[in-house]
Image (cartoon, rainbow, N blue to C red; front, side, top):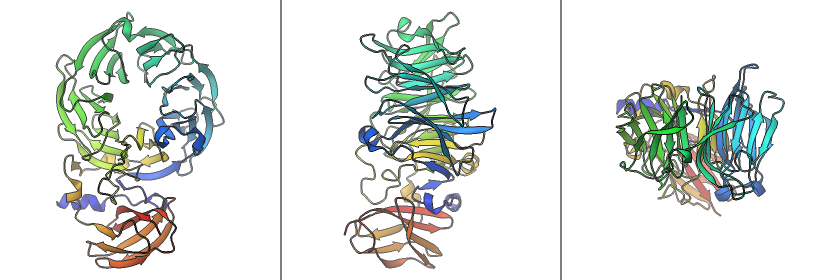
Length: 480
């Protein structure tokens, strides 16, 4: 328990603007919300989807590439506290899905939304001044659900490629990108393994492909030197199986982390893939009881970033893969989820909202995170990556939290009673959804007070309780 208290006191203190985002060991250093046109928004209020990053070595610049419901933004984050939009590439409007990958100075953009749609190839060498759209069309494919680039073999992988008109569908395509601006189709999965009907996502390294095949499970494939695709192994019918969504491999190639997206609230999985003929389960782990993990990303063999819809971005130390330990988090979606404390059911019925994905491999160590409703976050996870204390997953953190702040009634029309269990110096603040502090009061023992909220307009606010460099947050609904 002593270590747990120590962790609480190490929780990162954020600026006033970022206090509405509960976090541990991850700092918010920059933020943009460029896609605000409601006419372009996708279903369920989805303004953003996939994201990626790019390092421009010739100019020593870093960029976030944010997929949105109407295109892709290229954002200069070299000065992360003041990110700036360098370019925008228009795509299909009202998109739910947009995925992005890069190779050298080329960016590939695909969307799986209904026709009419297109595949786009963008030349980024002219950044930060501009980008050049060098291809936008359907001759490669019209729709693609996911993309992956294996830079070791100079190949582009496309999951669930749909062709225009009556040309059909391919579960997975492999393209040569020896000339990055002009991909050449090498193989379709259906030519060699017709039993796999759909590849939702894939992670490929040096021609070994870990294919997440939805309800069919996980398949490991190999792109041979002769061009064909062979099956090396599979992992199906496992405990807590659902819709196999996406995966990532440790640097040593021994362990694979993957997520099952449907139904909601399934755990993430770690499996031993050192013997592909006998893939073995190592750990099933759940950030919180109702969390729905979406996409995993790994640095080396031990640092896992886990995009988790309504619970944001979480960081784990998996140096002991059988006991994953959570070392930090940043909740990009405080509207609902585990950190939403004002309702009995913390999770919105539209469970697939919030954090879509992240990119943790920039030279600076900064992480890009796209939240479908809230925008583009630039995060510093250095404390989470180096933390020596962590919380073993499976602990009920509500029971472990030694202090609390309570407010009644909620919703509130005029006065609200606040009480805290912490007997020491603390600060209570009320912040609006734009990050503006509207009320602040300091206490030097347990808070037991009434606050007047009659001057505030109807809407959603955040009550923050600060002590020992820790922020606890609750949402307040004011309804006069």
